[in-house]
Amino acid sequence: MNAPVLIVGAGPVGLTMACELARYGAPLRIIDKADQRTDKSKAVVVWSRTLELLDRAGLAATFVSAGIKWSGANILAGGERLAHVDFDEIESPFPFALGLPQSETERLLEERLAALGILVERKTELTEFEQREDGVSSVLRKVDGASETLESSWLIGCDGAHSRVRHGLGLAFRGAALATEFGLADVHLAGLDNPPDELATHLHQEGVVVFFPIREDRWRIIAEIGNLHGEARQDLSFEEMQALVARRVPGVTLSDPVWVSPFAINERMVEDYRVSRVFVAGDAAHVHSPAGGQGMNTGMQDAFNLAWKLALVEKGLAGPDALLDSYSPERSAVARQVLKDSGRLTEIATLKNPVAEHLRNFVARHLLGLEIARHAVAQRLSETSVGYPESPLNEGSAHGLKGPAPGARCIAATPFGAGHLPRFALAAAPSERASKILGDYWRIMESGLRTPPDPKGAWLVRPDGYVAAVARADDLSPIESALTPVAG
Image 1 (cartoon, rainbow, N blue to C red):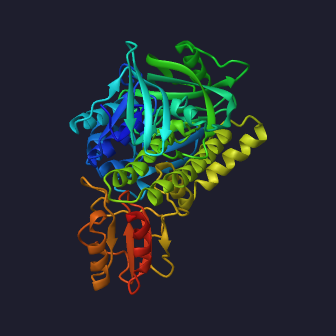
Image 2 (image 1 turned 180 degrees about the vertical axis):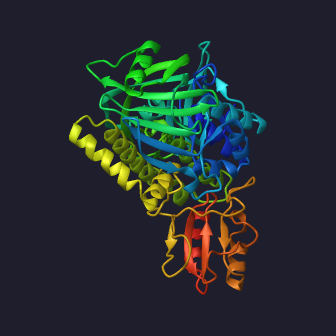
Image 3 (image 1 turned 90 degrees about the vertical axis):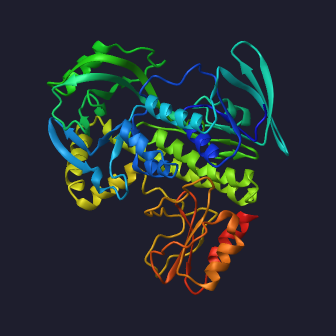
């Protein structure tokens, strides 16, 4: 069976992409070479901005009920708390981080996808593909050796750090591996002097240890285990992790391990997320340090960004060039910032020079003692600060108006992009010109006007809740300038 969209990879990113496209009625197929979804916790946090985007599809409440809310994070050294960040300072309908194992994230997304009539085709691998002007021809191989040639209009690679789609496009994955090796363990623990709903980062000269609550009775631990010398370690014993934690955080004991594993950190990304009719998203496009828990969230937000654009194009409601060309510059800019932030956090946390350590601890204690600094950290971690200020879709300016600028996130009581069609929203005072815009672009617009942040202005908001254009109330031409290329 052929389909307009083929998604390769059924992790959180591919499943998010599939759920969004299916919600919008775009036919698709999604394949994965694994025989079942992961049973490992892997990524363990869903941040506020991701929950906001899930809320458009009515999924946020399901996610929240399946996880635990993290109310804050602590940074400690030598048993002394250097800083505390309150997540209730996050400016969002979801002012918390959600602790949720990746296995649960995938389960919830796959169940929603099945409810939308799409099943993941497992034990199915993409072996090769070829682009043409009007589509993509892909060869799929089943576990029993049978093969199929699938014709699709679009191919999306959500197939991880070793992406066959990325390799097939010949995209350079620029970056490097860090020289430090880490270990993770999912365990029960006792003796940790920390609230059960808060993260704890313990800085130690031997290496950092971070504790994440992932269940009411279970924690994820990530710890620095040494420098890489030649090949990366292939195994890590529970006893090694237990001894390491006991030295660095005295009084803490581990038990009942579910998963113990070493891992190395790569910081890499591609420059272009799109080559004609083929796209890459998530780890296929960018990988980075787990510091801050940004990886899965950034990938899922790649999917949210691309899905509404591709759905409008595939349904014939928008021209392909302006919308699809915006995906790579918007999301690659975000990935560059995430790489920079997570890399800096890792570098700071793994300092070994005693003078540098003392300076780091001094700065953490005094800088994060300031409310404005704690607020900025909470917004950055939660990804609510993510925006597209340099997007090619932007028009107009918010200068002199009280409201978000083009490219900024916009929050409303009713989520933008809810429902079965990706529609732009116009927030403006009633006028003949505003009514004409709604009429001229009715196929991609909400039928009614929303209340503007400032009555002197007008805001065009994209289906993903980011501002596309801002205009003065007496001159809506920037709104039309933004809509015209989109509508083709």
